[in-house]
Image 1 (cartoon, each protein chain N blue to C red):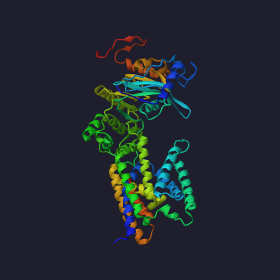
Image 2: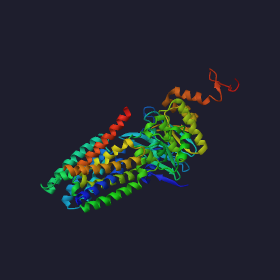
Image 3: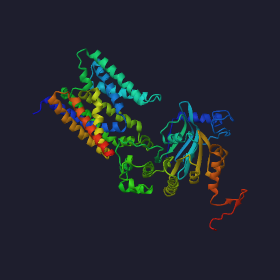
Image 4: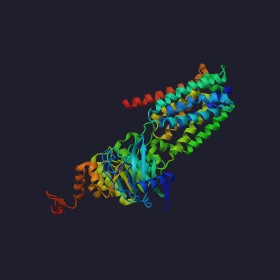
Length: 265
Length: 301
């Protein structure tokens, strides 16, 4: 029989694996990996905020992730620097600010590594409630706006000319991304959250012919990655989040190498 | 008829005031050159009201970006059942005008009225597919549309791209992709088809074929067409009305009138004007060496 802490870790990671699949595919299709990365790292400031105001970690991170998304959108309006430079600036800047603010507000005893890389074995029942509630919300909303999101991903301007409300749909998508970051940050940390979204999607791409197939495949890959990663972690004492991400990365590299070999061979 | 007004009342009021006080379409003094190619005086501007029967009617569109005026008081109507072709040199603002009419770009001033029952089928100038998104042609043609596989196959047959129905979007050629995008536009059962340089990447024979197809479909289904091109005589011959744009509307009307307009010659050169004139008159009569018309000899030989 599994230990309760291991069971909670498994329940949390498997739920996140399912929620991450459609979101991760959409992030990859819209070339938003670095955008999401910046949002996630800025959310470390949300950890500091929750210490400062004594409010829920999840809600504080959600609020900061939304603000980060708005700041990125605002700064991307200037046309002097490309978006990746802006994101580089913001993600390093906010990471630095987040580390300093969290250490200053939470005191020297704070487990900074836990917020950067997550602590999957410290998941509580309350965390599980957030993950299942928030995750169900994210999946439900994505289900509702799936068609317009796909149309925007294929060709943004064509979709808008055909009547898709581009800004509103994109706004809903960003809100779902922020929600996922908020419910996952304790488990995977500010630095690994986005890997959990995009790595399975990357692994699934070479074997998918339709968008939905890519999502299902990516969910399956995530589940396998979680199971193997947690097993590795339990046997070797390696930290859980990094173990899962490492297993997923190996799977993605194998999958992409196969695709490259198929192309050249 | 239902008419949806786009753009704020403030913009409209501003536009009206300008029309009333200036009486001239340009922001410069008459006679002063307003652009590289258009150094003329259009005479007093008579503001005409929007055409509410048209699918889209725009008045006094002004749009500048980064301190550069791209559209300068442009008026345009897209009536049901007519092929309107937008021509003009590179950088004339053709694509920007199309984007404004489609609602993709917000004009700084002016008024755009879209008919309440407007359904747009749009084929954009650039259609880059991201390889990260797996998508078959069939799936793309059913995305957000009601049709089944049979309807998709029929639309693809119409544009001559039947064989790509099961291909991935990223795997087909530029010319095929253009046809697939046109098929999507047609599947929407539009009453306005907007095609921005539809013959890019299509060879010359394919080009003539495409325009013939568009003309045929227009006759069969009665939709309006807005075509953008910087290609001249083939397009001109296929159009009901030509609008010659160089940030402002230099001239517009039926193809023959526009081709004889001095602005057209100024913008496109005397050769282009002659090429068109020869094309236009080819079928009814010829000229002798002195330019006097000869009777049509077709069918005699």
